[in-house]
Length: 117
Image (cartoon, rainbow, N blue to C red; front, side, top):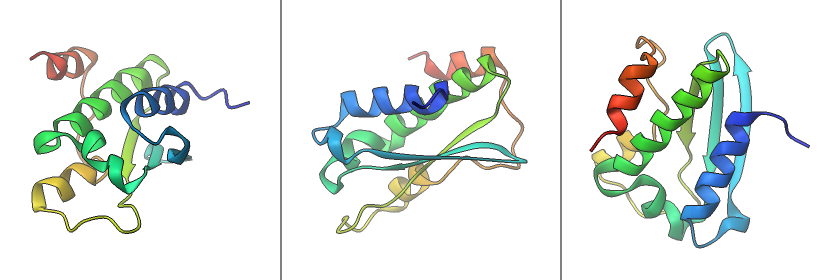
């Protein structure tokens, strides 16, 4: 049983968004930069995870930061391009990249502000 809250949170969130929940795979690694969650989804579900202009992916990353802060960890998300995926425009490719590890972590208030519409 996986006790990592960040991975469990991401799995529950992503599976609730996609049409192929059985295809959701998450790999969790930890290094000196923090936690890296690598997400694989069915090719047909990429649009649901990325969202328009990458907004859904950004929101998921912000939520993961909040979960990480609660557990004193820096959590980053990388979204893998699925087999047979369509060619991406630069905006989508940027949304799939993991967070820039050289950037300063946001405060909890900054992360919550990012969620406000």
